[in-house]
Length: 390
Image (cartoon, rainbow, N blue to C red; front, side):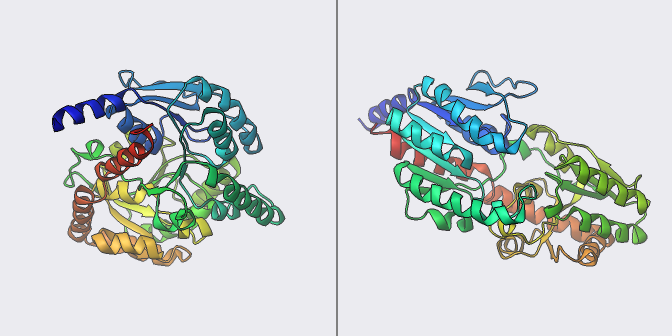
């Protein structure tokens, strides 16, 4: 009888329709598409994803139905775009709606009212802190916008069904709502074949968006110092620049220090291709500056470096320290002092054996703890609380 009930329950889940929505992130985002949406589809849910139109489509055997929309080029148009997705989302006739952007809070409330179905908000960051870090906002505007956002969030969240968040620090604000912490750990299968023996001992990797608040200028200054001790050191960036003006500024800095032949910019690559660059690097850098949002969020690259057996050099923030020291997976530095970063890099380049051992520690922690398998289970259990009796 127990097996029959389990089979019936599974079949009930299979018929449930899920609509995942993002107007900001790319369609094939690591967390939204490859982790959450694919996990839901493989568990038997009928998943539709409303997301910006991609340059190319991925063949996933029809597991996730992509409903592409045009992505606004201007930041201020993102809010307007959020209203246009309501019609598309409603037409999916989903049993549950799961949205990923703060711009969609009002749209999420409208969907809740119109459909009477569960609606989940997925908070990737501490958004009030993120607002205070936005370079494109004038200083006098930041505080009013932050206050306005916090007010909107407090007004809307009580009417939604639940909140998903990424870290304890981000989740502190959501404890009074139905909530679930789902970390953005890497997919196990994506890094299953990684070897820690094929590393290029001279390769230092920066993975992710290239912006001023991520300590890129300090990293270039640090690397300039590193090359005085290790002529063969190479620094590779995999990610896109925030703006043309910042790209110009960084290139000028590189040229003025004679580092053109030692630094390479790959650009942004599909999520499924990052392992190719991680597999060759021996050191991974996270030189984030201590802006409010960085002090409460954990970057994906921290765990991706660990998954690939790459020794991490990260900013010495309390929540970074908890992971890095706990796993023995790297070194911590003062991101505002290039010499601190340079000293850490040089110490690892001088001792390849030690560097490899630290990378292996990170890999072991990824295999035991920091992989998506553990988070997938939490996601599916959280969904069942809304759908099993629907």
